[in-house]
Length: 193
Ligand SMILES: C[S@@+](CC[C@H](N)C(=O)[O-])C[C@H]1O[C@@H](n2cnc3c(N)ncnc32)[C@H](O)[C@@H]1O
Image (cartoon, rainbow, N blue to C red; front, side, top):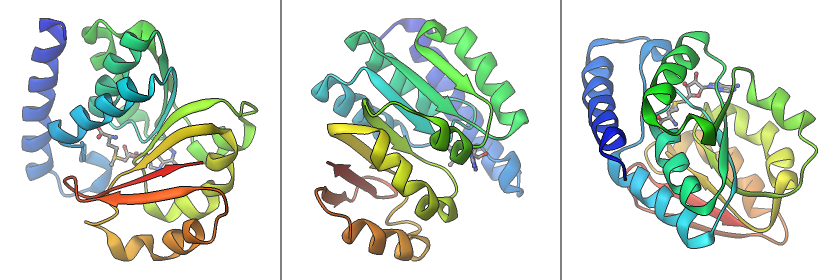
């Protein structure tokens, strides 16, 4: 990993921790994944040779940078979705400092709207890290755009287990997929079809 990116990731970790301690409003908190989760996402991308990657929930782009660094090694790129104008602007600034901006397409819009319109069924890797109450309504489109053999990773399934009850029911009643949950930080659900 380039020194410039290592430094930026460290700065974002410090900023995210401090900011989230100070800010009470969800809209102002970064709610970034941990460094270990970032490393694991990058590991999955390299292992599966994923090139077409979608992230739902950019925040200020911390997780996107882990995804994009791995995508670069595979010759791929990341489409990332963020509905908050404030966070999308922070992400844009961070992407431009990262040396990875040619690997990242930021869509400043509601992910549900994006998913409905997305025609492709060839996404290799989807990282879902947004507001949990949307997931049930997004599920059909998320599954449709994932290519057979692709991987979906969903964060917070253990830390916010009660918010996942309906979604877990839906997933458990979906045919032709494999699901495992691992106790990585906030808990990751891994789904392949
Ligand atoms: C937990 S944070 C993402 C953290 C980020 N993945 C990281 O680790 O750096 C969730 C983000 O999802 C965004 N979000 C919420 N609802 C959304 C929607 N309907 N479409 C796109 N983004 C949404 C929020 O604004 C917030 O920035």
